[in-house]
Amino acid sequence: MKRTVFLFIALCLLVSIPAEAQCAMCRAVLETEESGNAAKGINDGIAYLMLFPYLLIGTVGYVIYRMRKKAHQEEN
Image (cartoon, rainbow, N blue to C red; front, side):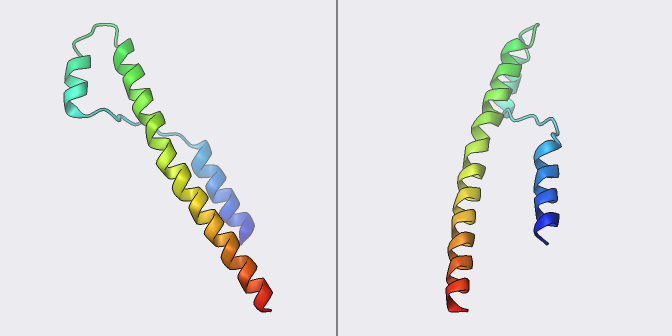
């Protein structure tokens, strides 16, 4: 079971799907630029900022999992 979960998480982290993270207004303003470098930078920055809430939730979930596992072992 642990190995399957680990492989699933590793696969999810290794597979990247390009995502457009800009809002409609930011996209409209940045598409007027011909080179598109600013739009790519803004898009990457938004995607980077979206990472931290998921890391925090994952860390809290892992801590809760470890606490419950430890409490369960102490009962037995």
